[in-house]
Image (cartoon, rainbow, N blue to C red; front, side, top):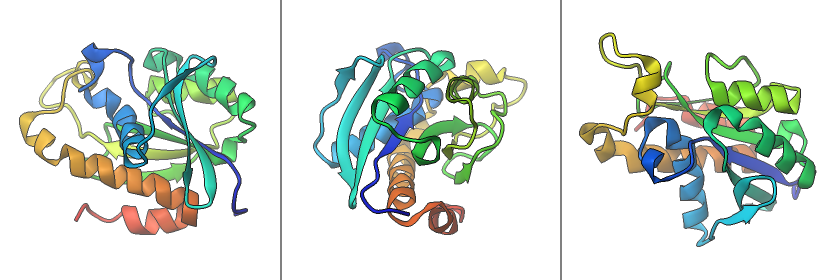
Length: 194
């Protein structure tokens, strides 16, 4: 890994206050945490996204929140990738993951979309699935609840008590990918939440 190469870190979510606390917006929460830790303010970019230009370790990093709805995230991500000249292998997408229990994280490069419309849109727009995914566990819906309804609900009262720790841990995982590489981050963050 070459020190000083720029990364693009994209948090997925839906824009607007109506969706702010939704499980589907946990990607936004993680990049908000990374920006807040650095005292940075979001600004609107012509790529139809909010961005923060900052640093993680020695590397310049662009944090981004697409201003489109989740299922149209790919357009802004592809435009930011082109504008900042960030190749697919240095793009990190932070998103909610139904197949991982709440308060757990998994990281990987590439793969399918597993029904996640944000990932499907990004893969189509980039023409490649080979970006890094920080998969933030939100768990499965209870009973027979529809998954689409579940992800658009706010976190439960019990979950909210742990949410800040979960989000901060995901932010730390992003930093570890940038500073030490994906394999190191997987070794650290694939264990159960402590």
